[in-house]
Image (tube, rainbow, N blue to C red; front, top):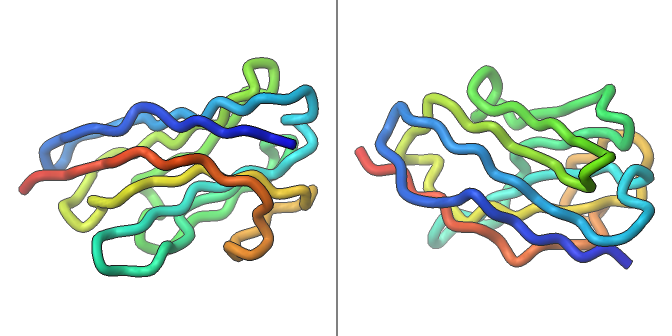
Length: 124
């Protein structure tokens, strides 16, 4: 069982940056691949970024490539999402998720545990 708690969301102006953190409970954090998803008002939840258990492989949605960066610190049981050059269309609730898959996965149904989400609002 893994419990995930996101933090770091907030209100930022367009062009600004935020770093989201996701703290995981449990001793087996390093055996999970991790991902970030987001859900904007009135839209379905969508994939943002994912990272393998070792941190050696990553994947990004086309909409965030070059602006967002996912990383993890297995010693701290934490995964991060650095978000730069934020745009109003990035406004959403961001969710952290954990998958038992060893490799990078991007499909929502491949993730087994989810956090409660953190709100990110980007003003124009």
